[in-house]
Image: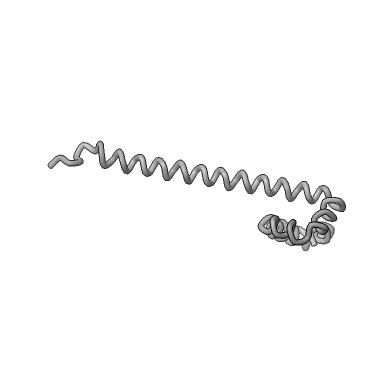
Length: 95
């Protein structure tokens, strides 16, 4: 399907390629496991497309890692601020 979508007219093919790439990246493991011959054929017949898929996967992975790191840092900062706020607030424990 991906090679077909890439060969389709731009008005039709662009959206189809994007949707198929997204689906393929989400299902990479099961696809490789269930139909390895089709994956090998895709690599042999359309190496440029396979490169695009790999690049998209790498970009998506890097984005997820950045998002996770940012969320982790924010959670750590909030926890630290909460702990310090309770322990060291000038009004804490003083009446």
